[in-house]
Each structure stands twice: as C-alpha cells, then as structure tokens.
Amino acid sequence: MRSLVGLLSGYTILVGGNSLLTTLVSLRMLHAEHGALAVGLVQSCYYVGFIGGALGLGPLVSRIGPQRAFIGFAATTALAALGYQSFDSPHAWAVLRLVMGFSMVGVFTSIESGVNGAVQNAQRGRAFAIYLVLTYLGVSAGQFLLGVSTPGSPAGHALVNGLFVAALVPVALIGDWQHVAAPKPATTPLATPKRPALLLDGLRELTRVAPRSVPACIGAGLLSSAFYALTPVYLADIGYPSSDISHAMGGVLIGALLSQWPVGRLSDRLGRRATLGAVALIAAFAAAALIVIRIPLLIDVLLFLYVALTFTLYGVIVSDVNDRVDQARRVQTSATLLLVFSLGGAAGPTLASLFMRLFGAGGLYVFALAVTLALAALSRAPERAVGVSNPEAGN
View 1 (spheres, rainbow, N blue to C red):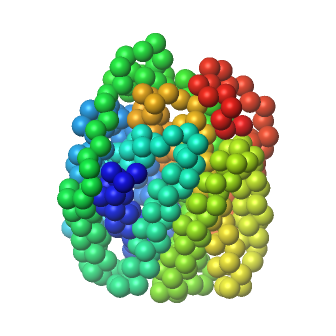
View 2 (cartoon, rainbow, N blue to C red):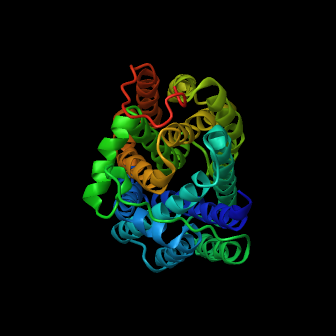
C-alpha cells in the first residue's frame, strides 16, 4: 500500500471534485426549474458513460499501469468539466456527464486494480475499506465545498476544475509506480479481456464464480446513483434551502467514511454474505422511515445511517469476488464489477425519479426500500458457485 500513496492522494482530491460537480449539476438544474425526471435522465448519462468505459478500459489499465492510466483519465475529466461553464443546456450536460462517466470508470479501475494487487485475501476487506474511507473523505469534502458559491455562479465550476487538475500532482510526483502486467491468455474468458464481447463473457464467468455478485452489484449501483442524483432534489422538495442541502449532504456522507473500516473488518470476520444481509436489512428500516418523516434533525440522522450502511455494500461485494478469483484476473475483475455497478447506476436516477413522480419526494426512499429489501433477500439465497479459487473465503 505504501507504493500507492501518491495514487490514493490524487484519487481523494479527484473524487472531491467529482462529488462537488455531481450535486452542482442537480442544483443548477433545479435552479433553472427543470424537474426531477430531467435531473434523473441527465445524471443517468454519467453511468451510461461508465458502461462504455467498463467495456473497454480494463486492458488499457493492465498494459500501462494504474498511475499512468489515472493521469490520462483524470486529465480527461478536467477537460470535460470545462464544458459546464460553456453550455447551459440539459442536452449538452447529458453529453458531458457521459464523457465524465467514461473517464471516471478508468480512474476507478486504476485505483481498484492497484489496491487489490497490493494485498492478500486476509487483509482485502480492510484494505478496500481504507480505499473507500478515502473515497468518502473526498466525497464529503466536495459536498461541503458547495457552500462557496450559489448554484448558478461560475465559482463552483472553477473550483471543480482546480480540484481535477490538482489531483494530477501527487500521482505524478509521490510514491513508487506500480506496473500491472497484462494477464496471460487462459481458458477462462475473464482472463482474456481483449474485446467488449469477451468482457461480457466475463460476466457469465463472474456469475459462475460468485453468483450473488452481479445482482448485488447492480443493487449497489441503483442505490448509490439515486442518492447522489436525487437526494438534493428530495431535500429541496421537503423544504431545505440550498445552503442547508450542502451541509446535509456533506454531513451524511461522513457516515460513509466512518463505516467503511468497521464494516470491512466485520466482513473479514463474519463473512461477506452475512454482512451483506445485515447491512441491507438495517438500511431498509432507515429508508422506510425517510419516506414519511419530515423533521429535519431526524432526517439528517436517518440519512446519516442510510448512507453509512448502503455505501459499504460495494466494498463487501468486491471483497467477496476478489476472494474467489486468481491474481492474474483482478484487473479485469475490477473492470467487470464496475460495468455491473454502472448498469445499476445508469438506471438508478431515472427509476428513482419515476418513483418521485408517483409518490412525491418520499418516492426516492420507496425506491430505496424496495432495493434494500431485495438485497437482504438475495443474501439469504442458496449459493451455487462453481470453481471458486478459495472455497473458504466469503460465505
């Protein structure tokens, strides 16, 4: 992990900028009197770009290594972010969100392949928890930075660009560079990621090795994207002013930061499957309460609990899968999991916005309740994994 100091530092800065930009887009669209459905559709384009990136970027990261890949993709996000200051149309923003998603999947693949390549199975849950702690440290800081400008002013977007450029510095200058060798051809489709079709074959292999991983990862994507895209809309609809929205979003995302390490340790000791079920079930209770409660203090507490739980799901799922695959396949596994996550992410804002049209502001958490209950039920489903490389890991 010491060799990844520069990479993880730059990553933390970058996700801070991305977090700020995501909520800034939602608030600017609300400021321009666009509805929840329009916000959901534009934000879904980010995950459509994710899908495109996940289909083809894994081999590139394998070939050039995580540091070089990070610099290239982070520079692309900085260029795309400039467009938000030049255009004020939802159609243009949809295209920019697509480009951002494509670039960010390259960033995430670089980071996750670097982290997974630096640790053994026994420490994987904790190592991934450190990575996610840094993720939500950046995400939470980005939300607090919303307060430096009003939604329609250029200052927020200038700050986003500054963060994206600053993220390049530690990656280029700090720490040893880790080079990931491209995996040698093998009989397993997941080990030969030279074409998008083979990555889709990798989905079938992933289902064979860890059957719960695909639907669980889709569910995690649904919850994460819907939260980021539409919680600002939910809070505005129930009466929060813009300044309070930034503080509420930043505050509740601290919950995601604080929960990563204990949940990672719990999954190492209790097992991934049991941890997934417990986390999803408690999150379902929080979502049910958020449907009806309208007292600001209680909403803040419930959102804190909800985020602290649901934002650990992806780490538990990834740790489970990486317990079961060979070292040579881990770069491709990261890309495949990000593809699956992005499928849920692409659908999340649009589906949740439809629930909001039907049920009002609380519809966002009617949607979340349905997804968390489905994940809890999934954790109880019989395991049918075949060819698990480490049968004692991740129950």
